[in-house]
Image 1 (cartoon, one colour):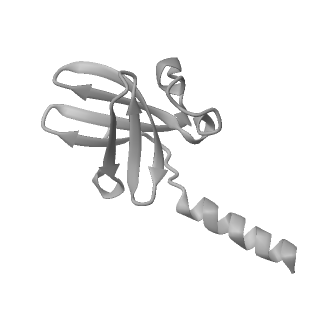
Image 2 (tube, helix red, strand yellow):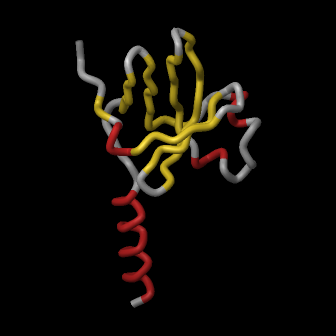
Length: 103
């Protein structure tokens, strides 16, 4: 019985996690944030996170006022929590993220 409960709990956790085959993008005018499913690779961002948190974050990029930034993100409830390479942080509601359309 305990094994069945553990399997059900694991399946529920996987169902709650965002999975996507392509990047998700949020846009506001010329600014955009692109979230990837891959692991966070930015050493600057990773250095700002607690050791155990580092594996929870995925890769992201952003363009703000024409400047490119590396970032990392993780889902927290119904928002994506982002940490940028310059130390800034932000959130984006999950419903604002859309699959990037092929050009």
